[in-house]
Length: 218
Length: 412
Image: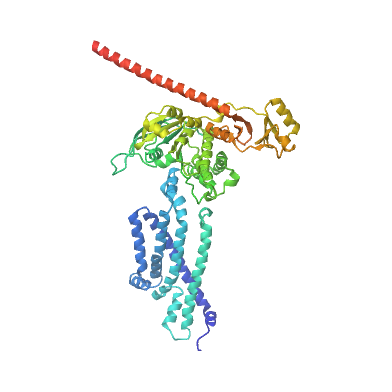
């Protein structure tokens, strides 16, 4: 077989692969930070009202139904190639699980606790920060985890818009199917994404351990 | 109690009204009430009568649609509700502790909000835990889910008392715990109030609880109309109308027992020996006291066994095997009803009274209880008659004055 052995391929191209992996992770991480801040904010603003909360959930889930390739394609004429369409698309996709879990989590806080918090003299912002958000944090963190997993895959599409990341490997391989390294490229990109996803997941388990107070840990 | 303790402030409710939009009649209609500083007032009434709504209007968790609230003479109807609530303790059913905070953090919330220095908060938390009968070292760092229902409720009371508010609002605080624990918590609250003298407004639907705890009871009917607002004794012996007597229920004489505590009746001294005393002491005491029974105390002077004259002989001189174990004791704060219960279940018809740490204090028996109950009921009857007499007299002078006035006008 004329194919280069997969391990040999990894050996010769590890520099490039590591750069791609790092960029992939970095893009996902940064978009997750933005999506988390936005998502929790949307949740906080809308959870008290029945219709606003539902509107937020419906809107974000509609975004999710747009095929990622189409979304990025649609963004290119507006914001150009490269990083901007990637970041925008990833952030939008990341929103849904976070918004939904934030709303569900905040609405799920025991009404008597909210009553108690108000009754002992907490102002509304204080109640939100000290009581409601900490109690809604476990479901929100779950939302963030789900979002991250999803974005890991979607970020690969970013290469279509000349974005950063392991998607480049996959697209290069797909473009040159039949050539010597085509399969290795696709394989390296895909496996890289899986490894990254697992690493992120492990990080979230750790974050959960560190940030969920012992009193409400399952 | 510590130097810092603030005692109660008076509460006045004036034409307090709550009307919900879209509802034809108000939920709370024109409540007028004066609550004196340092007293426990109980709102009692059937569910849905608006007692809880009335309570929540005092700290404006529910904003009144009409009327005024004055606390310690200050009109609080218009002030910032957040500031108001920090000065009014609030305890609710099933405690409402924040599960993500430790016991200490829960208690420290209000002192932190009002800006106490860290050192003071820390010592205050320890002091409060001690006050509500929880060992600070053990409970300080625990999370609410690691506590029993009764313990949670104690922490809830500690949290309400944390910043030493003059007024304490309690919304069915003991509604969700089992009867035995509830009984303990009620006793604790009475003990606390003896030390603290706060003004407490307490909502319950349990009339027995109301009698046990209240200095005065407001029996409320629908829309929070006050059917009667008086001392428990007066409500029991002299209910204002059929609604109140229906609520008092049967067995008013028995309920009267809840109003008097063991410390109010004569506690007898009983011959005792401690477990470390020589046997000879036991025989000497028996001989000199003239009773045929003696109470054996353990090393910490807690009642341990009842020993009769023949018991030691039957157990062949071994104190460990002789006598019957003391299975029930009451404290000086226990009600006569508790004491009667204990005396009735004891086969010899007496119960040992103990102090705060369980140490021996004296003995109460059936005869003492019977005599005190008779005296109590007699006194109540006299008082009720006197009260009635006064009312009649007042009415008579009023009519007299009115007639005179009429006469005067006619003459002129």
